[in-house]
Image 1: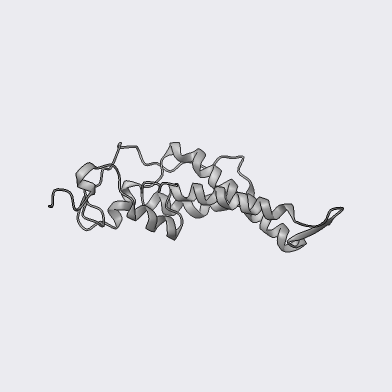
Image 2: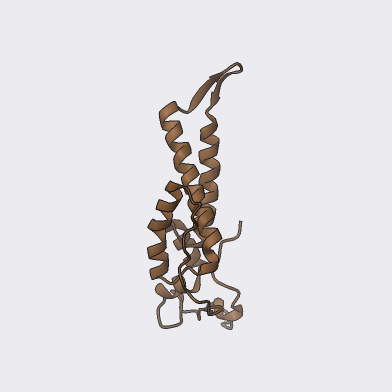
Length: 154
């Protein structure tokens, strides 16, 4: 699966010089969106709203979110809420259930696994995990020869 391109502001934070990333390459800042943090949708579940309140301040401080990111952030926060609920269910009821067919995995195990995958996928778009920060830092845009430090040598 290809790596997600890191947002320009995250590239610049780790940069070596103004307008350059950690590898010294020019950073294409992209369109000049108005960076106003979105308001949380009223319909978010309680746990999702708490996650929204946790991540928005930092994403806003880094100028990584805009009003049109609302849907993606809501999906991330609700995936988190489902993950939490499924995990708490497994903690209460155990990893397995008894059925006519014998001992089976508790359905909440699969729900937690699936929502965890969805959550990590959405989180990667905003650099919300240490591994995606590092992966995004290593990925470059399609800057042609500028992205290749060895271009033109030889």
